[in-house]
Image (tube, rainbow, N blue to C red; front, side):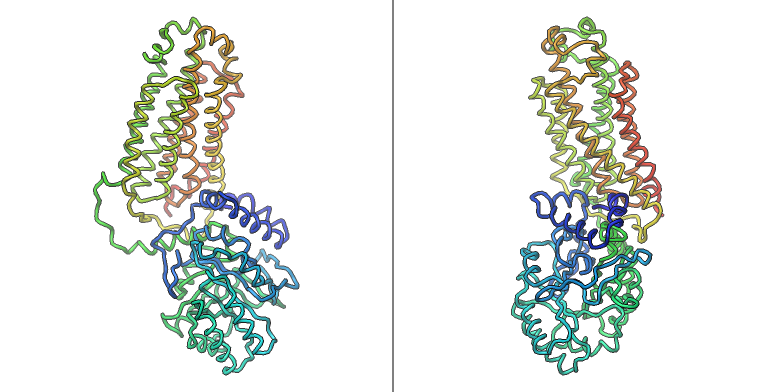
Length: 639
C-alpha cells in the first residue's frame, strides 16, 4: 500500500472498520502477498523503498541497513514480517513474545483525535511456538529482527528466571537481538542482578545481544538501578518503548508519547554516554520526529503508529531526510570521464529515438510509405487509393501516432538521462532500461506478420548498441540537492492524488500497448478501422495479400512503442516523486502533450472521428493533465 494508494483510497476504508479488523486485514494481506512466489518483487516494484547503502549502521556486531525500523506495536503477531522487511527498514521489532501467548482482555482502539492507539495493560502477545514458526528463515531477511520477551508479572523469581532462559534458548536461530522487559519493579537489586546474570549467561551460547526495555514515561531515576545492572551484566543498550500510561487505564501508543520519548532519550544519553545503544520509538509520525529523536541521542528509531496515521511511505521519507543530512557536508567526488557514465549512452539512445521519431513524423505527414514498403507491396504509393480511397489516410493515422509516441519516448529518455541518471538516481536508470528492453523485445513481433521493416531494423540495432553501453557503464553516486520534506504539507497531500492518477495513466498506457500489439499480430483491424475505410479485411486481402501484413507491422510497432512509453510514464510516478523534481514534471508534460497531440490531431486531420476510438486518447490526456496539475506545487517548488 504505497502512500498514493493508502492516503487516498485505502485509509478511509480501513478507518471505517474496527481497529482489530483493519489491522488484521492489512497485515494479513501483506503477509499473504509476501509469501506468494512473486509477491516480494511486487512490493519492491510498487514502493522501490530499499534504503541507500550509505545509511548503514553497525552496532553490537549487527549491520542495520538504516537507522529507522518498525516497533512492536504495529505487527504484534509477526504476520507481515517479510513484507515489512521490504519497506526500506533497518530492523523490525517483534513481540511481545511469551511462552504461551496472550489475548488482551480488551482489544486495541484507535484514538484518532490524538493520532494514537490504546492498548490494554496486558496487551496481545505471540507464543514462542508461533513466533518461531513465523520467524523461520529470519536469517535470510535483509534486516535484523529484535524479539521482545515478556514474562507474566507476579510469578516467583525462580519461575520467571526459568521461563526467560527458556524463551532465549528456544528462539529461532537467526534472532540475534533480544529485548527484555523488567518483569517486576518491586524486586530487590540483588534479585534483579541474579536474574540478569542467569539470563545473560543463557544468551551467550547462541550469541544473542540483550537490550533492556523501558517506557517513555518511566521515571529514569527509579529505572536507572535496573539499567545500570543490566549494562554491567552485558546488556548492549536500552529500548525506549513508545508507550505511556493512559487515563484511566491501559496505555497509549502514538503521537502523545513523542515529547516524553525525546526527553527520555536525552536523559539516557546524558547519563550513559555514547557507548550505549539507544533504540527509541514514540509518536514518529513525520520525518522531523525521527530527526528529533536522533538529535536527542537515539542511535536507532522505531516507527509504529506513524505507518497507520501517516502512511507506509513514512520510512522511505525518513530515509530521504537521513541521506540528505548524511551527504550534505561530504566532499564532492572528483569529476568522472563522461563516456564511463551510464547517462551519456542512454542520452544518446534518447537522442537517436527523438531523431527517428521526427523522421517518422515527416514521412507520415508527406509520403506515408517508403520505397521498401512499395517494394514489399509490389505497387507504388499512387496505386494505393485505387484499392481504397482512405487507405493512405488510415496508414498515415497509424504512422503519425507511432511517430508521436517515438518522439515522446525520446524526450523522456533524454530527460531521465540528463536530469536523473546523471545525478545518480537508480530508479531513473531502471526506468530507461526496462522501457528500452521492452521496446527491443517487441521488435520480434514482426514474426507474427512476416514483414521486416529495414529502417526499423537498422534503428533497433543502432540503439541497442547504445543501450548495452549504458548498461555496462557506471551509474555514479546520488547526492540529493533539494531538502526533502520533514513534515507532510498540503502540496504533498495533493501530489498523492496526482500520483494516483499518473500511476493509473501509466498502467492504462501499458494495457493499451498490450492490446494493440495483440491486435497487430492477430486481427490487425478493429471494427472502427474498417468502418472508417468502408471495407472489409477480406476485400483488402483480395486486392493485395501483402497489404494486411504491412498494416499489421505498423500496428504491432505502435503497440510495442506504447509499452515502452507506458513504463516511462508509470515508473517515475511510482518511484520518482521527490520535492523539487521540476525536470520530471516538465519532461512528462512535454512528452505527453507531443504524443497525445499527434495521436488526436491526426484523427481530425484524416477525418477518423469515431467517438469510441478517440475516447481512450482523450481519457488518457485528461488523466495525465489532472495528475500533473495536482503534482505541480510539490514537484516544481523546492521550498
